[in-house]
Length: 414
Image 1: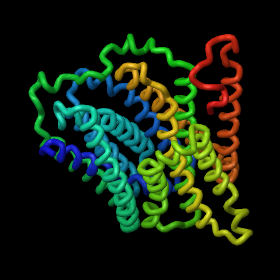
Image 2: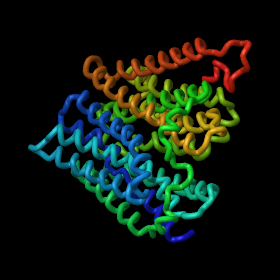
Image 3: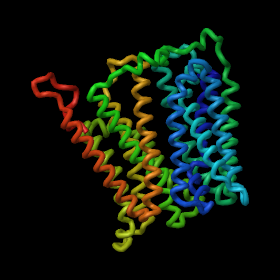
Image 4: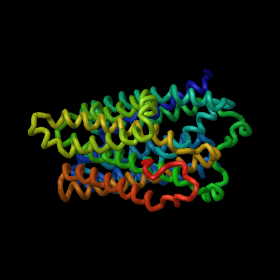
């Protein structure tokens, strides 16, 4: 393993030290702001990162991957700095917080999108198999870094609410320093690799098959109904249970841990269950988790503490989140598409998920303020079931005529 690859792996680990992430909600909540304002701030980040993900491929045609990563990391640190400035005692500024979320979300998307290009620079000339091995080796390290940083961030926040954000700024700056030490190849060698969409107008005409549209929608719906509650509802739920800040990282880390376990060892189990079984694991995990949160008060009357049912609920949600990608990749047939077209399909999926997540976060804010968090959890379950039912109805209505050649997937595929 050469020096560049080791530096790339170090960058991936350091850049995933999200010390501030578990306590971001607590920072906003400590301002005594309305919950709808908090969810708006969270939705701005989600929307900005989604929009920036569309901008990144265009920037990659005029800017080397290394500089795009540096730009993204710089914007991430600037966004955190704006959050600190906007929450200083006696100088709280909502416009500053909105700007911080906008800048930070954009930087996150730019750095994440350029990550793959940076790997190609670090491992110049490596084949797809080698790149895959490097990706696999860093995946576990990234999960561990996120878990450890989350716990440390909670401890730092417990001492002073800005310390976790100072640590996050330091991590972004440190990751930029690591990237600067990666030896940049000659311009001709660092030219855009095959597979980066250069002809966007041509790719924009790509028409997905019914099977691809179905599973792209499945990905967006399940990811949206998993990540939005994790970002906006679960932190409020645990805050109302007076969970100590230093435990926030550990408690919310169960979500990441559940997803990590499934992503690492769950593929054989999902393959054994079959496509339908994987779908039921995903939907069952999401519905079961949200239902546990919605009925936590009722369960407490039967001797099950709210904290215990909540730990089971967040673990189920993490398991469901980890299963989504495995389920989709086994059914989303992209073998006939070129690499640029595959990138476009995955980009569309992420964009749909991002917008749905932002929409749900805003809805959560309105529901919690008008009713309660328990009602909001219940409404989220009903909304998911209604969305699935509407999707199934749409599939039934758009089923090809029986005399036509059968498609790659039956209407009951979801």
